[in-house]
Length: 380
Ligand code: FES
Ligand SMILES: [Fe+2]
Image 1 (cartoon, rainbow, N blue to C red):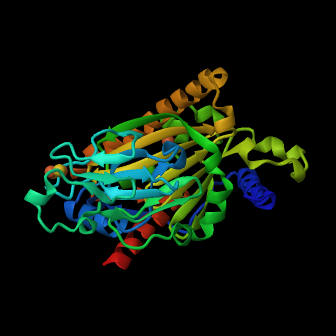
Image 2 (image 1 turned 30 degrees about the horizontal axis):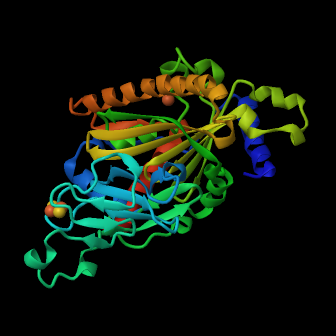
Image 3 (image 1 turned 180 degrees about the horizontal axis):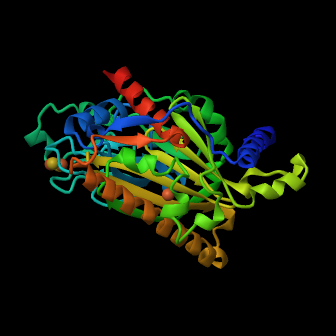
């Protein structure tokens, strides 16, 4: 983000703070609770959103060199990501082409060949079938080239490895649109994963996204942790297509009034949260960022991955305690959000609410809802 944009954002927030009002939409809106619990809605979202759009599957540093691999499940697809001999990342379905066994069981590792644990059909890192035990007697005339691993569209972009789980074309730059400059500007390729936590969470994926894009709850829900660090119910956001950039000013924001604009730095006085549609969030802090990945498993279940991303040059043993403290504070704070989200999910079935309500200062939630509906309409 260039300095002029930082100053514009800070000026807008200072103005709101001076007027004692949060950023307000024209009206408040409601949303039907069925969209958080209906199996048919979830199936449409999986086909039209999770499978159809580019999604982050890993950070580039998680596949550090030729032969490095990792496995994961995304949008119901078991995936195998491999860095091939030439250094390019490839994605395959992690499924044997003989009788369908799971090809690789480990979460990560490094190897040049992938041999099925059932009967040892074997592929190289480019996905070509290179060995079939007793091939001549068992499979006469087998055309090996017809039994390469099933490819999944994959692109390394901005320090991240993206896939389209359901197949088709992949163009991350197009997907990010006007958000691309900010994401490239983060220089994520200069970072690596310091610590990563996974949480199987009993809540719909949209409730979890919604919990991150308003600051209305800070003073209440986070009163034991970070509430004092932020101004009450003051934030701004901007949409870039379906993606959202939220800015959450810290308590130090008013100090800027006494300083020349040339000295203003957004990162010193606010946290920036990028919500990349549909499932990735980056929470920028002063010297590192947090990567939150939401992977929907069922209408009422989402696997969350929370990673503390630190600059490679600063990821030293001497700094380990410092980063560990950050990861701990992030985990404790987000846990407050996740427990609330699980409570919402449990309450949905009670019949207490046919609809939920988004206030005028929770406008980002309404935008996110629109993005989901638009993506479903496109895929219909
Ligand atoms: S199922 Fe994989 S080799 Fe038979
Ligand atoms: Fe929160």
